[in-house]
Length: 62
Image (cartoon, rainbow, N blue to C red; front, side, top):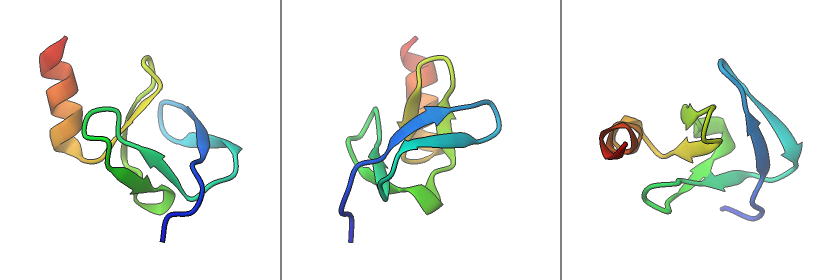
C-alpha cells in the first residue's frame, strides 16, 4: 500500500508536497500516514501526527 515517503511543507491550513510520495511518518508514533488521511500537523515544528491523540501528546510534552 505505502510505496514512497513524501516530503511536505506544512502550512497553517494545508500542506504543500515538495517531493512526491504517498505517505509521511508520524513524529510521535512512527506510524505511516497516507497523504489523503493527513489531518494533524504542527506548522512550527514541521511534524505530522497520526491522529489528535499524538498531536495532544506532543502538546503535553512541551
